[in-house]
Image (cartoon, rainbow, N blue to C red; front, side, top):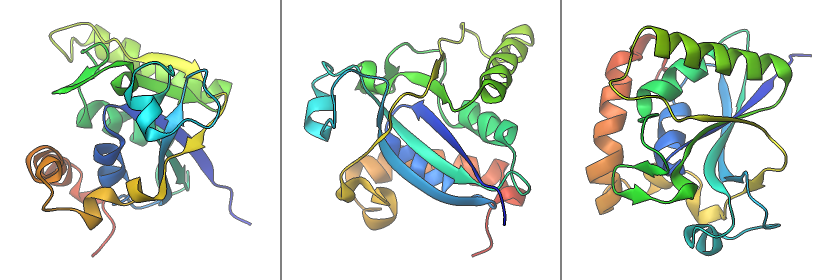
Length: 180
């Protein structure tokens, strides 16, 4: 039996992250959801009030023999800005924070090591503000958020925000993409 792992990442709007990660070889599932807060079973509307403490996240199920956790982290730091506190572009609030919710100590160590390495090489002009926290409880988002970009490519946010990010991502990571 194959052994799959999970990664849970917050990098702004979960629609953006889901659209990128679902195209990767070795990724079996990408579920948008919420974590990191204090409200049980939060709804999207509650999370958007910026009072639940939750972040919009994606939970990725992946085959570590095909794609590594380190690969997922590298992509994470490419597809969002880890230097803006509680913000990605025009999306503002703690629900849009940059965070890595680790599932085990090995993931925690890899996340901290990658942040340290990026800081040492001055990969960004500003300090990295990405939080590294233990995953406590993951709440899947409402069904209408699943595969949002794929189902709504003409929607204004998808066309103006996600599409350009996705094009940049696909150009850089062509060799890691699933074949169409």
